[in-house]
Structure formats: structure tokens, C-alpha cells
Length: 226
Image (cartoon, rainbow, N blue to C red; front, side):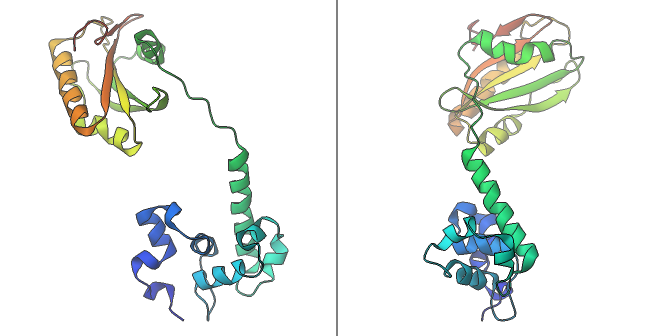
């Protein structure tokens, strides 16, 4: 028997999951991650394969058996059995859980409403982004930086890091002017153009930059400032 620690890194289920993603693991490897350990004579993967080969139904067996039934299997025990059943139940609930309806962004006004009320009274300049998918639906909102009243906009690497991580197709920029006047400065416009160029290189479109004032906003795209 080959011990788990003696296996090449990409053959160990947990390491393989971390490096390549859970989708690359076989059923036995996924079950081995849940088991954690095997026995003196079987690795966790070997034990998992033995469990899955017990019935013709294979992985389907895990959705039907009770924890005490699993616990009676050599090398499993009650703790591992409960862990497996909990994972199966979580998977069942995820499969039947309705997906959250995403918000579709269709106009500068709709974009501004995402930020206006919670940014208009901030005393420091705050720079945020909204990440969108290919359907212009919101994937996430991220705060990039908070600074002094006259702070400069965030660097491209800070802006696009979350967009790349979440595979966003495009994004909207937004920052507030604590003075209450939403008129963008020349520095705001130049920094935005720089971010647009960076986005073109990365294949992530910068749709607009919304500047928030006190109860008012300016869309740089709508006002043809970009």
C-alpha cells in the first residue's frame, strides 16, 4: 500500500483540489477528502474506492445509507459517517436552493442608485467598483480604497484584481466627492482613462465611472468625458 504522504502531490486528493479545483477530483478522491484518513492497510482513497464499490449504485449509495450503517464499515466509524452524510445533505440542499436573482444594470441612473444613498454622506473619498457578467448583471460590489478628501483613484492592479478573480466581463467605477459637488476633476478623468486602457488590455470593459455628490451624480460616460 502507498501511504498518502508518499504519493506525488497531484495524486493526493486535498492537494489536487487546492491546485486544480474540486471539479478535477474523481468520486473516490472527493470521498477521500471527506474521510480524511484511511486505515493501516488502506489509504483514504483506497477506502473510498472500497466504499463506492460495495453496491452497483456506486456514489448513489451515499445518498441512501444511514450514518450508523456507514459507521459499521471498517475504517469509517461514526465521525466519518456523519461527515459524509452531512456533505451529501448539503449537496442536496444546494441542488434545490433557488438561485438569487441578479440585478441587471441598464442605465447611468440605475448605476448611480447602487451608490447614491450610502456614499453621499461619507466624509472620506471612497472608491468602489461593481462587477458585471456578460449579461450586465451584478456579480459583486467591491470597495477598493478609502482615503483622504483629495486622495487619488485606485491603481489598476487594485481595481482589476477582484474582477479577474471573479471572472467579470465588465465593471463600473464609482467614487464620492465629500464636498458634495459631483463634478469630476481633471485627475478623475485622466485616472479613469488609464483604467479604461488597462481594462482593454485585460479584456474587461470599464462601462462607466459614476461620481457621487450630495444627492447628485455625474456619469462620465453620459457626459462624454471619456
